[in-house]
Length: 442
Image (cartoon, rainbow, N blue to C red; front, side):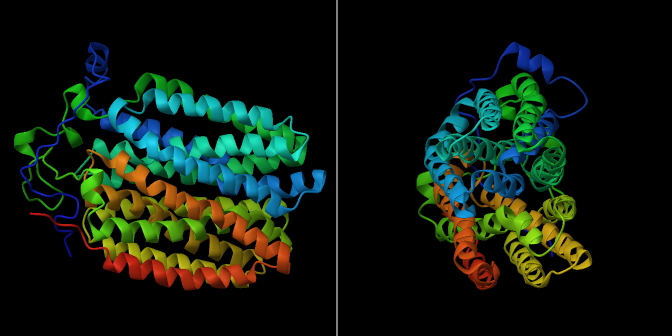
């Protein structure tokens, strides 16, 4: 089934950048060459999403046991800092979306990684719970309110026909980082302690982001005198072979998007998904070690999970260009639920690997579909602003996920009840997406 008009609408609304803040002669010189500059943007965002994993829940999860054992804190106390920072990051995202749309992502992302790396260096010096809270709140605000928002929206401005694969490749960095960074962190913790691990990953984040972001990141192809996908306007064809008119994708403003049913249904589905995803990811390493897995085996499973996510996200990006996004997304969430069911019964390395492959692949695919669907449903002109309006709700789910799971554990001594609740919530996600048809307007 050919994906009809899901990612392209042939309206007469012409997308034109309204503020060319980054259009300089130097920019024009750097874009000359045989490769469309949009792929440079994809590479920079790939590095940024890789680096963002230093503050994602799988990496934080590696620190849970060594920190709680040293200070005597509970897991829910640690999760409380993540919750507070994530909620505040959602509020920050409301304002950052408009800033990214108007002024571009270059210095926004540069400053965000500068702050994040600095906070991780300070993390290695903490002595009191309020130290941990102050640093974690700042890093989570920076991650969720600035870095993730920017990385999830920039690429969609550079591609229309090839949007699915471009977004998938750019965001595959997060899956790479989710596999590599926690593994490296665990190795450093085992040999030199968690404090050394904290400042080490801060330096890693600086090393792979600051220079590429400052030199090569740009807002949109129009700022550089280019068109999305890098194709001449008169010779464009979509993947199915049919002619299209590039740069004429219908785009919604935030006010218009809020008048559609899809905006709220997708927001609901993505919020519940965030609640489940962060609850699993934050607690995965301690959950597996509680089950008797060695710490190195737990992070090995996490690395396989992340590698499977790369395959899943890239496959989803290609499929999203051809097939109906709604049904693809529902299928991916069913796969995620199957993975959680396997996690409930995991008791040895073999089942752990099966969980990692199934849940990792479908989780990566479902996450990528969120970014693709928003751009395909509402266009790219105001995508950061629209995304910024949904982020507070999604990050509320993101924030409550780890806290709810750890509270269940601290109360019952087990994660079983919350894992069964996740299975039920996946039915709600699928129902919401099923009802979220592409918005139309006269």
